Image 1: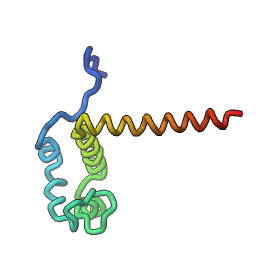
Image 2 (image 1 turned 180 degrees about the vertical axis):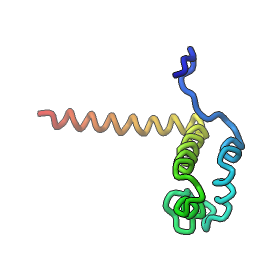
Image 3 (image 1 turned 120 degrees about the vertical axis):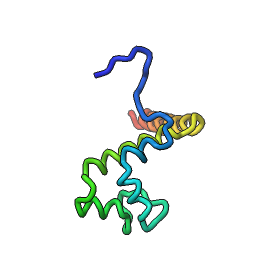
Image 4 (image 1 turned 90 degrees about the horizontal axis):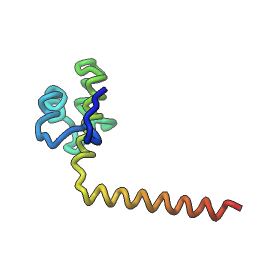
Length: 105
């Protein structure tokens, strides 16, 4: 447990090579994937998935890599994209509440 007054969250900062250093084996294997835009989750021909199945890469390490990739992608969103995403969610919630009130009686 960490108590840092004034900090709202702790996450991945803008580090260009953090994942590459921590997960160097996974990153090097990703160069051998069949598709350049491979997400390493369910594509056929993914060298990382094959390595996990063979036991060359620890499954927990693989899952941590995916989790940190998602977190990295989240932090890379620009402020505009975050606002747009929040606005769309707000509209969905507003419409849902509106529909619930219509069907109330």
